[in-house]
Image (cartoon, rainbow, N blue to C red):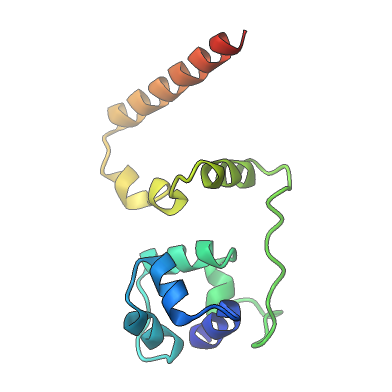
Length: 132
């Protein structure tokens, strides 16, 4: 199912364009479209983000999905905190996939996560004070 979904979602883009955006070779991307190999979870996340869909959609894990049907992209204007964050990160050219990579976060100790949270809150407070 993944290979068929990739072909449909790619549309008029070339394999080269999609591969470049995903940070892989065209040959490697071609293997996924031709069902020769399966991507790892990190690449599935990148693909889902690139095509503005979900991993479930890519893998065909929803009964309402059909080959040849492109699911309407998620409405990023919804007042959903995650959508708003993703839209903000995209606006500022921040690689959201990298930012939300759970493996990177799991490498941090609890005190380092608290330190990041405190620093983030400090930056937000500074920005608010500068606006006043």
